[in-house]
Length: 410
Image (cartoon, rainbow, N blue to C red; front, side, top):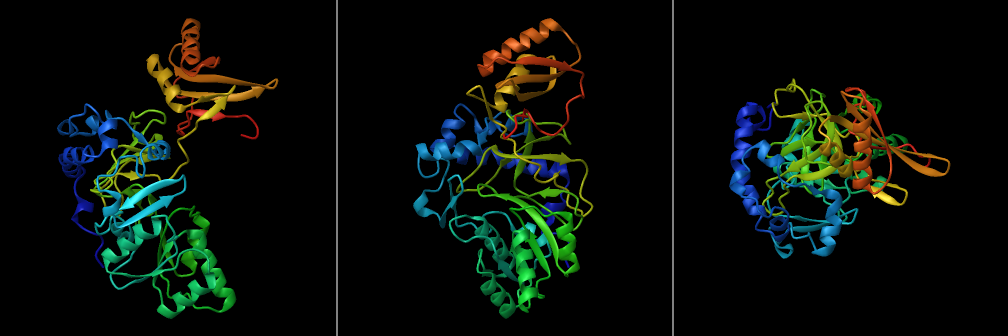
């Protein structure tokens, strides 16, 4: 059995960076033909976006802003290059968010994730992702077809009918959530249905605890997971090494400080930002709102691309204090205005029936005048009065949190 989907997966990291950023100016130029990107990237020369540092200088498109932008300029906020009427499918995800699917084969770049999970041509794949409006089922269905697999459009619910299809077709593989796979297997066991033909699975969209993975293994099923979102397809996937998730080829992934577009150091937790080459619906620095961290080194499986630790929580930590919304970007703005500060965190609590907030900031010096100046900046930026506590460098945990709400019931 071939170990890798193609030679791209085992390129040297320097060659991969060279190839990605040689192609990026054309991707940016194509995106800027769409009015939404033209507005967001106004004044940017696409030819100048030819390095990771240059990319980091571009503004973010926050996924949390997409619903508003799409409402202002239906259906896609002006970020689609291909008109809606020329798309293959038009999807709708919770939010609501709207996404076009183009005619490109494997439009969501899922084939190599399936390949890494052991899927091969001739497999009969039971697809239990929802086929109603949302794109997840189609991202992996098209990927399975690109590998030469047949698919069963199982969808969600109707467990007995799905088991009947699995038994009749002798499905060899499964895509869907891990918890629904367990439901199928448990129901098959209780009802006497035969689901033993399933030997491999790629799961996403829900947690895969180690205990559940082991249960699947004992039932003879090898299960791996991938990280995907509607706007970009499969961002990263697991291999047989089971050491983090390997970033997909043809994507550029950054991990940045929540609330800003500044990349964090390797190993630090930050927000996942993705740039894609999708010809119909390109994404340039899409801030996903998900937290993760870059892992050092390469995967033992031989794939050489960047690895991330997987989903580690949400980056959108916006909260309301004394009736005012306070955003992570505001906290980062305070830190930028005071270069003496390292990591910062805004802690919100409640005492005496009143909201209180304290900016805890790492700083090599404990200077009362500096604390007063930071407090003034805190009030100026957030429009809410708060206190400042300076702590030695290294005191704050590296967990990606910029705002921590300690009020009960929040």
